[in-house]
Amino acid sequence: MTRKRLMHFCLRTYFPVIVKILFSAISVVLVSSCERKLSDDKDDPEPGSDTIELFADGLRKPIGIASAGDSRLFIVEQDGTIAIIDTNGIINPVKFLDITERVVSGGEQGLLGLAFHPDFKSNGWFYVNYIGSGDSTHISRVSVSKDDPDRADPFSELKLLSFSQPFKNHNGGDIKFGPDGYLYIASGDGGSSGDPGNRAQNPEVLYGKILRVDVSACENNDSGALPEIWAYGLRNPWRMSFDRLTGDLWIADVGQNNIEEINMQPAGSAGGENYGWRCYEGSEEFNTDSCNDPGPYIFPVYEYQHGTTECSVTGGFVFRGKEDSEYYGRYFFADFCSGKIWTLQNSNGEWTTELFGIFPGNGFSTFGEDTEGNLYIAGLDSGVIYRFRL
Image 1 (cartoon, helix red, strand yellow):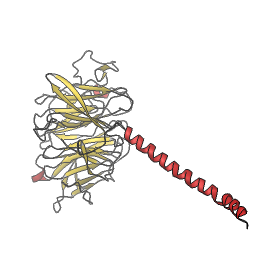
Image 2 (cartoon, one colour):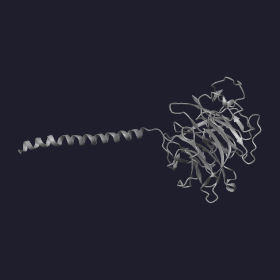
Image 3 (spheres, rainbow, N blue to C red):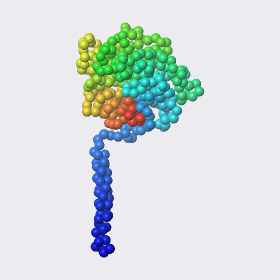
Image 4 (cartoon, rainbow, N blue to C red):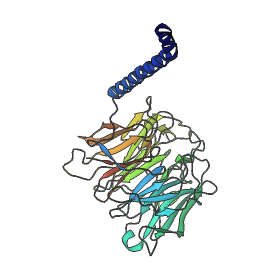
């Protein structure tokens, strides 16, 4: 083969390959450059040392965080299990409780709440709120194992309160012990859309209420309606908490079409507050049929409207950790869809908010605090627990 024919052969054989390799290399450079550009242009802050930090990962739909008064954190997983995390963020491979066979899970159903008895260290009692067979709500007492403090006895369940749910959504589900020793239970309006039965305003049903129960004597408050009802007029109260310093009760209520709200019931309240739903969504009229307008409604201390990404409020806690922190005394809350976290405080009689950060892709479902007042937040979608650096 002559030199000229050899050159033509090489060009026909290898030139397309060389071009393809060069094109691929250029594409990689361009894509990498674009990825860096997108990253550089991103305004949303990421979890980091200045805001929140990764504490634990690998949870299954975490939907509740509770403390038993010791160094452990207990994580409620929606499918019906409770996990334990130690101070280093290490998840105990053995579940504290597993009642998946009793729990109806999915959507807004599942194991929804956990609260430890104030005397848990001596009696070993804790309480759960879950949706069971027949789409019914169950508030039950369970005991820790006598042989292992990191295991509960699933067969020790003692039902305290049960009631059926008209629909599968708006179950509320949070439970907390108040400073008075009573167990407070957040109950949604029974579901569907717009509270078609006007149940939240009905004093003869348990839907759309904050309930209060004396778990030690089975004696409830003696209000004029059902004895368990403490406050009413709520749509789907999604996470409530007591300020560990003042005793104020904070209630985040998920809106219908447009408004998410934060309610605050001062410590020392005699109960009976009407937070307005379905007559009002936030402070705006929604459906005033059969309503006592203007009525003795208690409107939110703060509300926000749905934006391009905001859709559902997740209530948190008043930070009572480090007293020298600029965030001491502020209430933290989040939006499930946008990943935004805000703080709320009363400044000279006026409620003001401040955006703490934006952390998309988590689906923030709940906050929690440990014995020292440090705050945590869980991502239902990400399976992550973050710890606040305040």
